[in-house]
Length: 177
Ligand code: IMP
Ligand code: MG
Image (cartoon, rainbow, N blue to C red; front, side, top):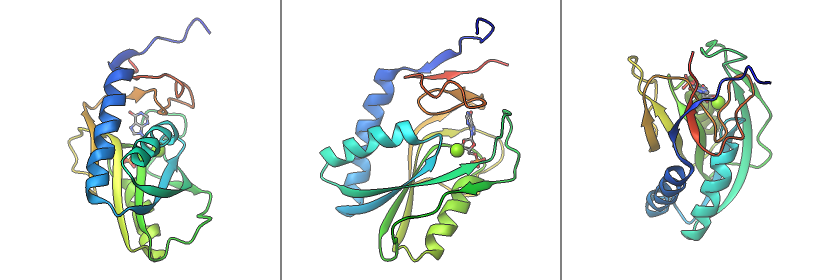
């Protein structure tokens, strides 16, 4: 236990809460009153739980679905090979879908999710990420809503993990090499 390094705080709990509130206002100003939220597991479960309650306070009613995507395995670098698990349990045909993910890096994960939801007949697919990593390569897709842009460092907490650890941290922190 004691060998686990303490990550360095990057975004405090208060800062995240304030941004989640303002993101919900941005989304509510553009989104229809009724949407289907598709939350990508596992990384976005904490963000999703907070964001949907703020969306509700902004008058948006919604259904929630979860899809699992995994690209990192137990490393800090994307394996490139995406593993999708789980399935959509509600019909998204004709629905306005808001995909929620923890962090956008290359865009591979979100592009795969968006493609799948379009093929399932959704009316529109918008994307909301808590974080966008500032990497050299241009992502293969743009998010419609971005909470914070972060430097190209490995971050954990508020749902984000390293080898399935640190998800429970109430803040976002940089995991030093
Ligand atoms: P992309 O498919 O390259 O955009 O990678 C996005 C996915 O990689 C996210 O959904 C996360 O699961 C994971 N990821 C990327 N960067 C980080 C990080 O710094 N910490 C934790 N997970 C990350
Ligand atoms: Mg993920």
